[in-house]
Length: 240
Image (cartoon, rainbow, N blue to C red; front, side):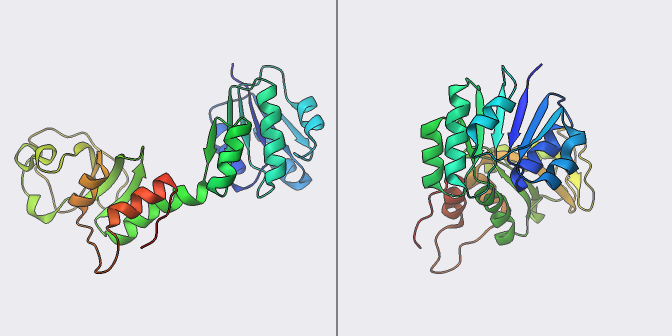
């Protein structure tokens, strides 16, 4: 059975704990805030009050054979570096660390982080596309080029079957599922299903293809919206 540790219960650490506790039992949490530990202790195997910057204490607390560690010590980059380096020396296979900037992320990778997470950037990458296209209901970059999104069916395809609409040929996207606007339940569909005006498609495709079918437009004097989405995902902002 895999063993997990969450070191630092900031907003990211707490969210990871909430999701992880629903599927795993062997979880240890460490935080210096006694109130936070008290609130979380029933979700985990063991909960400890300790300062993450006290590496010796953290090493004594962590179980042998730890498989995964999540580190969220806020903006304390020194503590993040010390803990990450210590986890690497202990042989932890997966070390996931929250960072607030590319520079800090690069340092954390150098000292042992196997994955650096940028919550603010990733949230922006999902939200901004929906702000510039009312036809987009969700947007999830899976890689710098592949995206999953919920898209309102363009009016020109209403009444057509999926075969007739031929979205894969015309737009390069694959339809995964369909739901009706106002509901959250996806349903199975057949190739001869006739598209309705209130249908929302869960699709997968390249960024450019998703943007194309969503109808997002470029405002005069601004960069193409596609480039902005790509920058948000890669974390390399460029000047307009």
